[in-house]
Amino acid sequence: MPAHPLHSGTIYNSMNPAAPLILVIEDETAIRDNLRRFLTLEGYSVLTAANGMLGLEMIRQHQPALVLCDVMMPQMTGFEVLENMRKDAAFANTPVIFLTASAERESITHGLELGALDYVTKPFSLPELTSLIRQRLTTLP
Picture: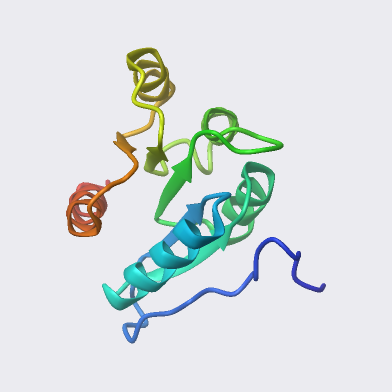
């Protein structure tokens, strides 16, 4: 099956074969590519999707250890991605960290009530994000 034009379907691997797989769902190409490069250099395997619908497809196909997800995206919001994940027992406990430009309290509260572990506003610090990811991955059951 050919790769969809908005995602490569390629898992970008670190040098560590046991590296956790992180899915980045982000509609802004520059942010998505920068996160992919940075997280790969940090030792993670990374898969990307350019929108929520593709992201949900990637979650089902690859079962990532953690999902970094933008909130405001075309076709399916990050909130809708998380709602769909929580309805599926296979992904109900997959950690999700929202990345978004919206710092509105209602949006943050809604995301956390849906089950996101964290809500990081853009622009964000890459070292801070890496620390958060590391923390969330070490507390997995």
